[in-house]
Image: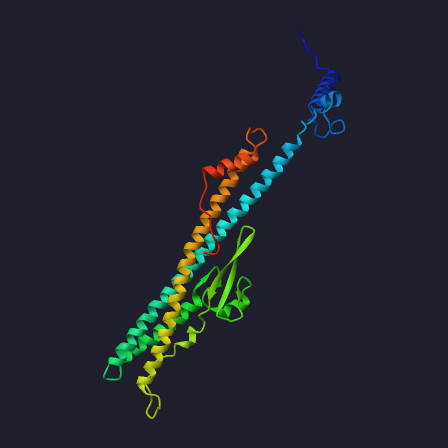
Length: 291
């Protein structure tokens, strides 16, 4: 049997296929360039869009409270991070102070050795003393955290993160802690960059005796050493305090996040019961800001 190609029949068949595809797309709501019927599929046009289930006022209020709790939990998480950052800052400051303290201790030893030296001339010890004094100045200038100079108050005026106190001897950084903030005190040691005068033997005819120069150097070193030692103790205590605060905020954030998980609308427990249950099960010590 012979078959003949009829171009008109082929065109009609192609149009039927195209129409069928268009109808299928419109019914399913997936019509691309053909759009839909007012943005609806044919099914939606004929039967109407299904209504969203109405939510009760309790569900809406519960969602609002859950959102607030999660927001507070996030705020406490950030407070914990801030306290950890404050702890890292004081550790770096403490390390710089320890470095200075060690140099000052060696400078005091050199003064004692020079006083006992009957030759009245020891260029090696004097050179070491002066190098240590320069090392103290360098430590003051270079001890920093993320660009914040921790010991050099001369840089605080140009750093908006640090507020220099009126006395000029201290500065402060505010660490956000929840809805409040806590101040971290910085100690200004810029005077040590030039205050530790270099030791030199008196020239011929100089009215200042060698003994007087040693006494003056000893007085400056002792004063600086006492000051630095007190600052180190303060920072070490502050480091432990920030660690405790960070741990406290982290625990409280965990409590709130767990409460938010338990406060879904389908839960049998009320939001209040969920919070009380978690607090009683996972209670921690309270932090006193005045300690």
